[in-house]
Image (tube, rainbow, N blue to C red; front, top):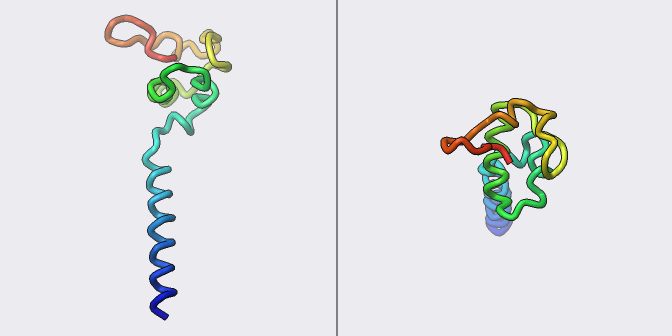
Length: 88
């Protein structure tokens, strides 16, 4: 009986770690179209971060990998502290 319990325990730990890892990822990967929007970005992790922030606030992300910001005015008009566009 003990080997089965040990095997069950190992499998449970592996599954829970995968579940926690997926929960720890940024919402940007799940939000709107950030995965598509950032697919060709040179700094993909940063693109996903800021796209996710913009998507949460604006509830939309423009289509494609670049441009088309007129589809989502809130996304287009968000600026960082330096006055540059915040959303990728």
